[in-house]
Length: 114
Image: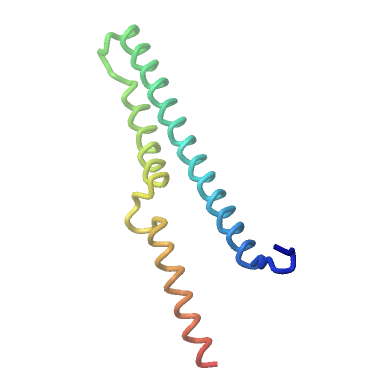
């Protein structure tokens, strides 16, 4: 087989590589988001447990002040989880994707009339 008989679709190959690369980048970003969330959750568990122990040994849970820290930081953890796992029903990634497609379709329609 001669080198001249070989057909190499350069355009498709580069597009395929670009798709793989962009998928890899998105997957890597997703892994980073998960690592940050789990790191935050682990820190929350360790620090709140430590505060609970300090609270117990100082007041014997007479007044459970560590719950204020647990509540405040817990709200942050909830919002972080909503963002990380795309649980926001109003402005999540699925909503963004639908809006992008909607605007692209509108743009295509307006371009046809010009």
